[in-house]
Image 1 (cartoon, rainbow, N blue to C red):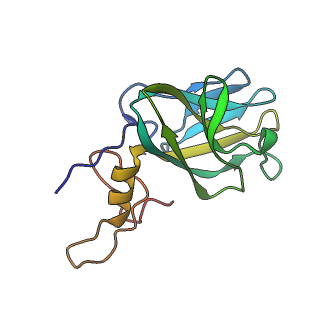
Image 2: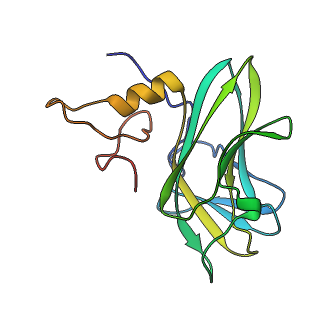
Length: 173
């Protein structure tokens, strides 16, 4: 069997190890007790960021948005959801389209590049959004993961894995 890799070293927030995501200038970032990365807005344009240097190639970045903590339905500044930034410019974007769903962005790099992986926070100051089950993988590894089957040939329907285990429910929730 070919090895596939999730390049995020701590894709399950809250497990032992350093936090990979830090707060943007208008947010606080915390890891909650049930293993989610929580982005709380303290101003406009809240987000969590994770810089990483990647070689040239095709990439997939994905995470699950569980929901919000706040008084209204969540929205994000300028409809941001999950996105990838290079030199201050968007190169990939999965626009915000509600909570309790997986967001996935695919992107291509022509040369080795440092990218900023971003997870949006809410536009309402004081509200939070909780992200988890993050994955960053080459397109080849991601496509291979999505095609995996069990011993009976039934699809596993994986959307992420943490390096040691995979979720039995398909990784969606």
